[in-house]
Length: 161
Image (cartoon, rainbow, N blue to C red):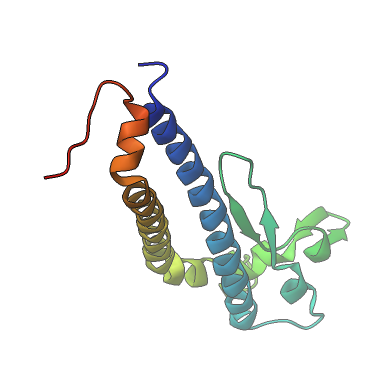
């Protein structure tokens, strides 16, 4: 079984499928993250300096085996230093403070996209598998009986009726 060409081809096809799925998911995640970033920026109600708007960003943390994209807000652009210490006013906007009411911009927007992201991932996965199946089917139909004869030379004789 270790030298079976069909098994070798199947293993090659499955590795290729895995790589295709990872690449397409990464591209899908990047596109969705860019759209989400724009909509989070639109949802910001209180943006005097523009730093909060500019702090919304996309970070690709994908590896070879795991596509992963983060959408972040806050950080160095929105961190203020006071006598009491440093605080990130992006968090104050999102969750409020003792003195200020919350003006959420991040999580409500993310929640609105949750189902769309799942549907997009499902469609991407399904399309990739369908493409792979078409390629494998085309290869199988092109090899036809001649491919079988070559693979089983001496063990199979083809006869025309």
